[in-house]
Length: 259
Image (tube, rainbow, N blue to C red; front, side, top):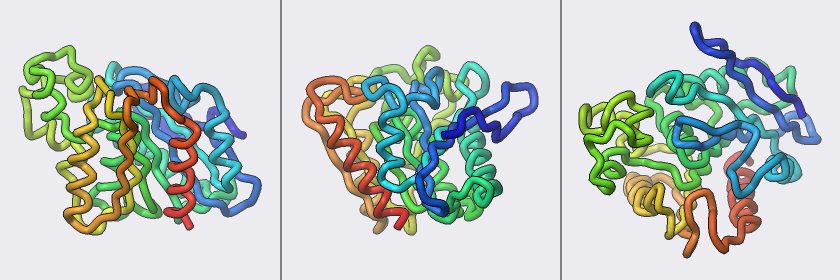
């Protein structure tokens, strides 16, 4: 495993790095993991707080997949779309360095958790073919997909303290068009890559309806979307949850999507 590989140095900001967990065989596909934290905190070193440490990444590697866990600028450093641009920069670096590190950049699966799932979905649904190059699928764990609906659900369209407002740099209601631009639901299109979406029914941070609506929209345009609603699970898989099963299901999707 290789830590702290710098993939971008945005002018005026800290260098951005990734950790590469390497599969045993050369030429294996790569899972690009994008951490959560409401766009304002979080670390590439942890999949989610209820699955700490390297073990989840080692289980992905054991399935024959590389894992690149990537940084992005947090909302206290830069606002949307900087985070999307950062993940795109990580993908560009991976494509450029693929031969050196023995990864197959033509078989990429994005895996995002919470805010990271929003970013990963936006990258995968980009209108730009070069941005999407090599992306075969997306694992979306309880990501916000409609920022306007999130704010409306909390009666917080004008609240600048909302996580989504911090990411945008303004209250969601101050520029609805920009909030929709930052929402994966607005970018659903025919020809989208397959999505594996999982969400807890007791999630109070991001309502499960966000994933239901997103999955329905993908299916409506003919995209492949599998949705798992986990009874009683809270955000970040808090509660009495079979986390091993959730992890195995996502890994199985990655292997199928990248085959």
